[in-house]
Length: 236
Image 1 (cartoon, rainbow, N blue to C red):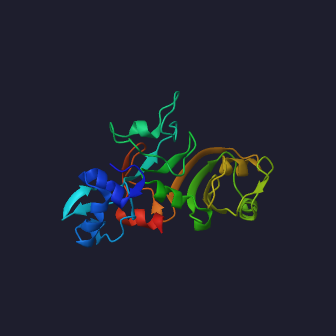
Image 2 (spheres, one colour):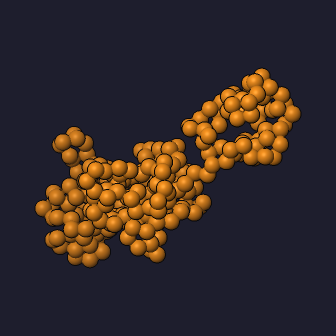
Image 3 (spheres, rainbow, N blue to C red):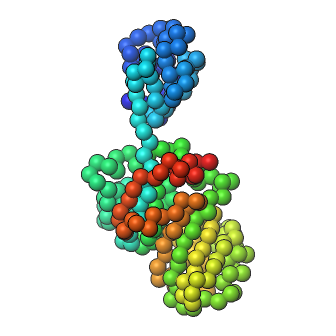
């Protein structure tokens, strides 16, 4: 089994019990395919999700896993915690093995959470230049007015980090409910921004990441596999 990546000749040498020099002959005879394409370079890097075949017989084929969960409140977005239940505890037995969480949610924040074992895919989600928007719905303790819209759009300076937040789009849904769209996720950012108005966030829910929207059929704690279109939408 491949861990992260390895040279093709090394993998085949170990898997088939042959010398690395013999791997070159297999490639010349067009007997080796990697992800449906005949391999030509013995130094080609193959990963743990590569589909490698010899004479049409699959030698290794592991599919990456991509899940969406409707995270409930009171659960930690972590793979392990000594005090609280984690989102992995909500999965069926053994299903959480190898999974990690790109884009965590706070303890009491609910909504769309992604889980995967594909590190390259999750790193793509965090690249600042991708500007992947996250959409949240917030319930506030005090009524909202148009001054919030301008303040959030201008960004706010956080002295602790010595940074100014990037513009946040805020839409007032009702007196106490706002929908927000932001492309970064600093520590308790939304709560701290509303804190400038002395307005407590009573509940916060993530509705979407990019074009992937939380499946409305998922009850809190439930999850499903992402569709191929959803995976690709966040990968590109």
